[in-house]
Image (tube, rainbow, N blue to C red; front, top):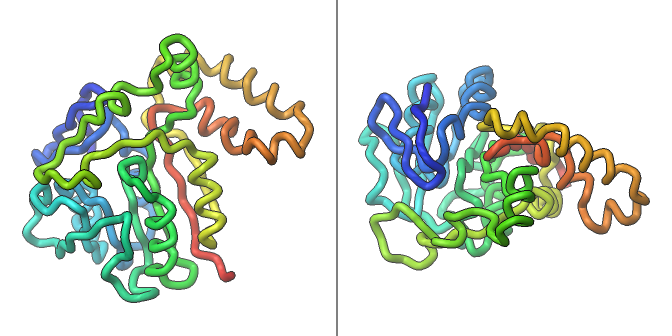
Length: 253
Protein backbone atom coordinates (compact mmCIF):
# COMPACT_ATOMS: atom_id res chain seq x y z
CA UNK A 1 0.00 0.00 0.00
CA UNK A 2 1.82 3.13 -1.18
CA UNK A 3 0.87 6.32 0.61
CA UNK A 4 1.15 9.76 -1.01
CA UNK A 5 3.11 12.52 0.68
CA UNK A 6 1.53 14.88 3.20
CA UNK A 7 2.33 17.07 6.18
CA UNK A 8 2.71 15.76 9.71
CA UNK A 9 -0.71 16.71 11.01
CA UNK A 10 -2.69 16.18 7.85
CA UNK A 11 -4.47 12.95 6.85
CA UNK A 12 -2.86 10.91 4.09
CA UNK A 13 -5.11 9.47 1.38
CA UNK A 14 -4.44 5.94 0.23
CA UNK A 15 -5.75 4.51 -3.04
CA UNK A 16 -8.83 3.29 -1.16
CA UNK A 17 -9.64 6.90 -0.16
CA UNK A 18 -9.31 5.93 3.49
CA UNK A 19 -7.31 8.33 5.62
CA UNK A 20 -4.12 7.58 7.51
CA UNK A 21 -3.36 10.03 10.31
CA UNK A 22 0.36 10.66 10.06
CA UNK A 23 3.17 11.45 7.69
CA UNK A 24 3.76 9.87 4.32
CA UNK A 25 5.17 6.35 4.70
CA UNK A 26 4.29 6.24 8.42
CA UNK A 27 3.18 2.62 7.89
CA UNK A 28 6.09 1.56 5.65
CA UNK A 29 7.86 -0.85 8.01
CA UNK A 30 4.62 -2.08 9.58
CA UNK A 31 3.21 -3.11 6.20
CA UNK A 32 6.45 -4.72 5.13
CA UNK A 33 6.79 -6.77 8.31
CA UNK A 34 3.20 -8.00 8.43
CA UNK A 35 3.22 -8.92 4.75
CA UNK A 36 5.56 -11.76 5.72
CA UNK A 37 3.58 -12.87 8.79
CA UNK A 38 1.15 -15.79 8.85
CA UNK A 39 -2.46 -14.48 8.87
CA UNK A 40 -4.28 -15.00 12.17
CA UNK A 41 -7.00 -13.45 14.34
CA UNK A 42 -5.94 -9.86 15.03
CA UNK A 43 -7.45 -6.83 16.76
CA UNK A 44 -6.58 -3.49 15.15
CA UNK A 45 -7.04 -0.67 17.64
CA UNK A 46 -7.40 2.26 17.21
CA UNK A 47 -8.63 1.50 13.71
CA UNK A 48 -9.37 5.03 12.48
CA UNK A 49 -11.06 4.83 9.10
CA UNK A 50 -9.82 1.28 8.55
CA UNK A 51 -6.74 1.65 6.32
CA UNK A 52 -4.71 -0.99 8.14
CA UNK A 53 -7.77 -3.21 8.58
CA UNK A 54 -8.24 -3.17 4.80
CA UNK A 55 -4.60 -4.12 4.30
CA UNK A 56 -4.99 -7.09 6.66
CA UNK A 57 -8.39 -8.12 5.29
CA UNK A 58 -7.04 -8.22 1.74
CA UNK A 59 -4.33 -10.63 2.93
CA UNK A 60 -6.78 -13.08 4.57
CA UNK A 61 -6.25 -12.02 8.17
CA UNK A 62 -9.22 -12.48 10.52
CA UNK A 63 -9.25 -8.80 11.45
CA UNK A 64 -11.44 -7.14 14.06
CA UNK A 65 -11.50 -3.35 14.40
CA UNK A 66 -11.96 -1.17 17.48
CA UNK A 67 -11.79 2.55 18.17
CA UNK A 68 -13.19 5.16 20.55
CA UNK A 69 -14.67 7.03 17.57
CA UNK A 70 -17.13 4.93 15.51
CA UNK A 71 -17.85 7.85 13.22
CA UNK A 72 -14.49 7.55 11.44
CA UNK A 73 -14.61 3.84 10.59
CA UNK A 74 -15.63 3.22 6.97
CA UNK A 75 -15.38 -0.52 6.31
CA UNK A 76 -18.67 -2.42 6.25
CA UNK A 77 -17.15 -5.90 5.99
CA UNK A 78 -14.90 -5.78 9.08
CA UNK A 79 -16.44 -6.21 12.56
CA UNK A 80 -16.11 -3.06 14.68
CA UNK A 81 -16.35 -2.51 18.44
CA UNK A 82 -16.35 0.89 20.12
CA UNK A 83 -13.77 0.89 22.91
CA UNK A 84 -11.84 3.27 25.12
CA UNK A 85 -8.21 2.18 25.38
CA UNK A 86 -7.95 3.98 28.72
CA UNK A 87 -10.39 1.41 30.12
CA UNK A 88 -10.78 -2.37 30.25
CA UNK A 89 -11.49 -3.78 26.80
CA UNK A 90 -14.74 -5.72 26.18
CA UNK A 91 -12.94 -8.86 25.01
CA UNK A 92 -12.29 -12.17 26.76
CA UNK A 93 -8.88 -13.18 28.03
CA UNK A 94 -6.64 -14.77 25.39
CA UNK A 95 -9.12 -14.08 22.57
CA UNK A 96 -6.69 -12.82 19.90
CA UNK A 97 -3.52 -14.14 18.30
CA UNK A 98 -2.25 -10.64 17.62
CA UNK A 99 -2.98 -6.99 18.33
CA UNK A 100 -1.94 -4.02 16.21
CA UNK A 101 -1.86 -0.55 17.71
CA UNK A 102 -0.94 1.89 14.98
CA UNK A 103 -0.14 5.53 15.75
CA UNK A 104 -2.43 5.45 18.77
CA UNK A 105 -0.63 5.11 22.11
CA UNK A 106 0.27 8.81 22.18
CA UNK A 107 -3.47 9.52 22.00
CA UNK A 108 -4.18 8.03 25.44
CA UNK A 109 -4.24 9.46 28.93
CA UNK A 110 -3.51 5.99 30.37
CA UNK A 111 -1.32 4.06 27.90
CA UNK A 112 -0.28 1.64 30.67
CA UNK A 113 -3.89 0.43 30.83
CA UNK A 114 -3.92 -0.24 27.09
CA UNK A 115 -0.65 -2.19 27.17
CA UNK A 116 -1.87 -4.30 30.09
CA UNK A 117 -5.14 -4.98 28.30
CA UNK A 118 -3.30 -6.01 25.15
CA UNK A 119 -1.42 -8.56 27.24
CA UNK A 120 -4.66 -9.87 28.76
CA UNK A 121 -6.53 -10.39 25.49
CA UNK A 122 -3.59 -12.01 23.69
CA UNK A 123 -3.12 -15.75 23.67
CA UNK A 124 0.18 -17.18 24.95
CA UNK A 125 3.00 -16.22 22.57
CA UNK A 126 0.63 -13.72 20.92
CA UNK A 127 2.19 -10.81 19.06
CA UNK A 128 1.75 -7.09 19.64
CA UNK A 129 2.59 -4.81 16.71
CA UNK A 130 3.02 -1.15 17.61
CA UNK A 131 3.67 1.85 15.41
CA UNK A 132 4.42 5.02 17.39
CA UNK A 133 5.44 8.59 16.77
CA UNK A 134 9.17 8.74 17.44
CA UNK A 135 9.60 11.73 19.76
CA UNK A 136 13.18 10.67 20.64
CA UNK A 137 14.75 10.97 17.18
CA UNK A 138 17.75 13.25 16.79
CA UNK A 139 15.58 15.65 14.76
CA UNK A 140 13.01 15.92 17.55
CA UNK A 141 15.79 16.46 20.11
CA UNK A 142 17.38 19.23 18.06
CA UNK A 143 13.98 20.80 17.43
CA UNK A 144 13.21 20.85 21.15
CA UNK A 145 16.66 22.29 21.95
CA UNK A 146 16.15 25.11 19.45
CA UNK A 147 12.45 25.88 19.94
CA UNK A 148 11.24 24.29 23.17
CA UNK A 149 8.57 22.46 21.14
CA UNK A 150 8.77 18.75 20.40
CA UNK A 151 5.95 18.65 17.82
CA UNK A 152 3.33 21.10 16.56
CA UNK A 153 0.56 18.50 16.89
CA UNK A 154 1.39 18.11 20.59
CA UNK A 155 1.22 21.86 21.12
CA UNK A 156 -2.02 22.34 19.18
CA UNK A 157 -3.66 19.07 20.34
CA UNK A 158 -4.92 18.74 16.77
CA UNK A 159 -7.10 15.63 16.34
CA UNK A 160 -9.33 14.33 13.57
CA UNK A 161 -12.39 13.00 15.41
CA UNK A 162 -16.15 12.98 14.95
CA UNK A 163 -16.88 12.95 18.70
CA UNK A 164 -16.22 15.51 21.43
CA UNK A 165 -15.15 13.04 24.13
CA UNK A 166 -12.06 14.64 25.75
CA UNK A 167 -10.39 11.22 25.91
CA UNK A 168 -10.64 11.01 22.11
CA UNK A 169 -9.03 14.40 21.62
CA UNK A 170 -5.66 14.31 23.36
CA UNK A 171 -2.01 13.90 22.41
CA UNK A 172 0.96 13.23 24.70
CA UNK A 173 4.68 12.98 23.85
CA UNK A 174 5.08 9.28 24.65
CA UNK A 175 8.80 8.49 24.50
CA UNK A 176 10.11 5.04 23.62
CA UNK A 177 11.89 4.39 26.96
CA UNK A 178 8.57 4.76 28.77
CA UNK A 179 6.82 2.46 26.30
CA UNK A 180 9.62 -0.11 26.61
CA UNK A 181 9.21 -0.09 30.40
CA UNK A 182 5.42 -0.45 30.12
CA UNK A 183 5.80 -3.45 27.84
CA UNK A 184 8.23 -5.21 30.19
CA UNK A 185 6.10 -4.50 33.26
CA UNK A 186 2.99 -5.86 31.50
CA UNK A 187 4.82 -9.10 30.69
CA UNK A 188 5.88 -8.58 27.07
CA UNK A 189 9.28 -9.31 25.58
CA UNK A 190 10.37 -6.78 22.96
CA UNK A 191 11.70 -8.72 19.98
CA UNK A 192 12.08 -6.05 17.29
CA UNK A 193 12.46 -2.26 17.08
CA UNK A 194 12.87 -0.60 13.69
CA UNK A 195 12.88 2.98 12.40
CA UNK A 196 9.97 3.96 10.17
CA UNK A 197 9.26 6.88 7.84
CA UNK A 198 12.97 7.70 7.58
CA UNK A 199 13.49 10.87 5.55
CA UNK A 200 16.47 12.43 3.80
CA UNK A 201 16.76 14.81 6.74
CA UNK A 202 17.03 11.87 9.15
CA UNK A 203 19.80 10.34 7.03
CA UNK A 204 21.69 13.64 6.96
CA UNK A 205 21.50 13.85 10.76
CA UNK A 206 22.65 10.24 11.20
CA UNK A 207 26.28 11.14 12.14
CA UNK A 208 24.99 13.25 15.05
CA UNK A 209 22.72 10.39 16.13
CA UNK A 210 25.66 7.95 16.04
CA UNK A 211 27.72 10.32 18.16
CA UNK A 212 24.93 10.65 20.74
CA UNK A 213 24.52 6.87 20.87
CA UNK A 214 28.27 6.37 21.30
CA UNK A 215 28.42 8.97 24.06
CA UNK A 216 25.65 7.21 25.92
CA UNK A 217 27.54 3.92 25.85
CA UNK A 218 30.53 5.33 27.73
CA UNK A 219 28.39 6.24 30.74
CA UNK A 220 28.39 3.83 33.71
CA UNK A 221 25.87 1.01 33.34
CA UNK A 222 24.05 2.09 36.51
CA UNK A 223 23.49 5.56 35.05
CA UNK A 224 22.38 4.15 31.69
CA UNK A 225 19.89 1.87 33.41
CA UNK A 226 18.52 4.57 35.69
CA UNK A 227 17.95 7.00 32.83
CA UNK A 228 16.88 4.35 30.26
CA UNK A 229 19.64 5.64 27.99
CA UNK A 230 20.09 2.33 26.18
CA UNK A 231 16.45 2.48 25.03
CA UNK A 232 16.43 6.20 24.22
CA UNK A 233 19.72 6.01 22.32
CA UNK A 234 19.08 2.80 20.39
CA UNK A 235 19.94 3.62 16.80
CA UNK A 236 16.44 2.64 15.66
CA UNK A 237 15.19 5.45 17.91
CA UNK A 238 17.75 8.26 18.09
CA UNK A 239 18.79 7.63 14.49
CA UNK A 240 15.31 6.74 13.32
CA UNK A 241 12.59 8.51 11.43
CA UNK A 242 9.29 10.13 12.32
CA UNK A 243 7.92 6.79 13.55
CA UNK A 244 9.14 3.57 15.14
CA UNK A 245 7.87 0.02 14.73
CA UNK A 246 7.94 -2.29 17.76
CA UNK A 247 7.09 -5.98 17.88
CA UNK A 248 6.54 -7.62 21.25
CA UNK A 249 5.52 -11.11 22.28
CA UNK A 250 3.39 -12.16 25.23
CA UNK A 251 5.83 -14.08 27.39
CA UNK A 252 5.01 -16.39 30.29
CA UNK A 253 5.13 -14.70 33.68
